[in-house]
Image 1 (spheres, one colour):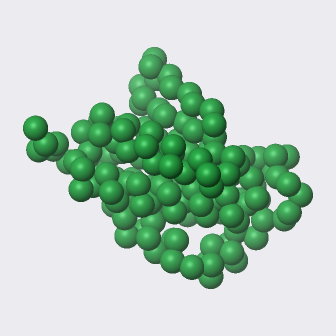
Image 2 (cartoon, helix red, strand yellow; image 1 turned 90 degrees about the horizontal axis):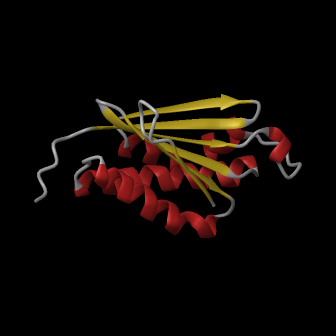
Length: 141
């Protein structure tokens, strides 16, 4: 798993490259810690983790590529984007993301219900899933 952080960026960003589902516990731990550090309350962090986990699994399963998980804080929201790598990294299977994700299960519904805003952006490389979680005052001590 690769980790990148650019402290000079206007929007601090955490980027993970996920090769297989066995890395999901690490993704959840890192994204959860990042969400906590930027002030997302614990009850909202559960929503973040549900959405990010579902999106990551869907990209891994339906694009046959590693998933790139990128999270950043903005003044208004905690934003996570999950996408497949480019098609040259594929194992040769042709992704049928629009069909697969549309009928494969409840993943899209969970992503939509966990996030304040959710976008599914299909492309010839697979899909980019964007989840936005509004910032709320952190009332934890």
